[in-house]
Amino acid sequence: MKRALVTGGSGGIGAAICRQLARDKFFVFVHANSNIETARKIVDEIIAAGGSARAIQFDITQRDSTETVLNELLEEAPIQVIVNNAGVTADTVFPAMSAAQWHRVIDVSLHGFFHVTHPLLMPMLRTRWGRIINITSVAAQIGNRGQVNYAAAKGALQSATKALALEVASRGVTVNAVAPGIIESAMTESVFDEGFIARVVPLQRSGRPQEVAALVAFLASDQAGYITGQTISINGGMA
Image (cartoon, rainbow, N blue to C red; front, top):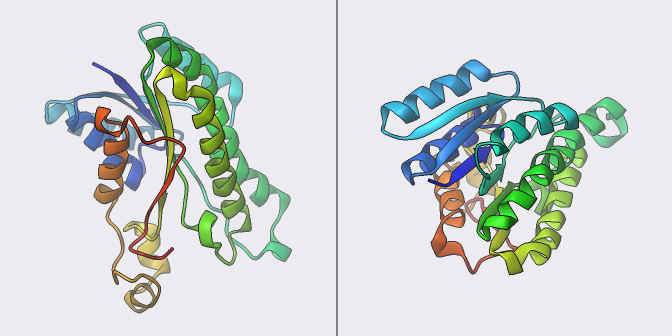
């Protein structure tokens, strides 16, 4: 059974990805930073449905502690699917943005990608099969007021996706990014009303976490073995 790690697995999109990968017969590590109890509940749901999963906790902005946890997992077997889903926002217009807001968003989305992917990559390459899937954002493609930090972090992640794909393609490892638009969540319900969504989204609705998860699961499958270095939008036609 191949093993998959989903960072930010306790969040809405992350949880949907974990459930779908478990249905697709991966052993799923459901990562959380602070919401470990939520991660454990997701694991319980997966196991009750006949899947295999384990909750793990670490702060992806901390390299040493992240590497310690991942090395413990690697003692058992390589991890062949990495979904770099964890991310945070700290929105404000750029002139009012603090250094802490800038660095926090960059640390989670971009440095977190390095801290998680780097120690897992060589063991993955030795298996000659792997999938690295980075969750970015429509904000990286078309921008968004108040999200210069977030757009910068996710845009850099898209560039890293393309470069890393070139480095590892000959070893059977693909690297792709998924760029969601407005996806249903507690946060988006309070930020985007139906009128706004109808104006900016050609499909005139929010996306569902399960739709993002289905795309991620396809990219993690054998059927997607000839797709690499791509950023695939799932945004209802926004860009």
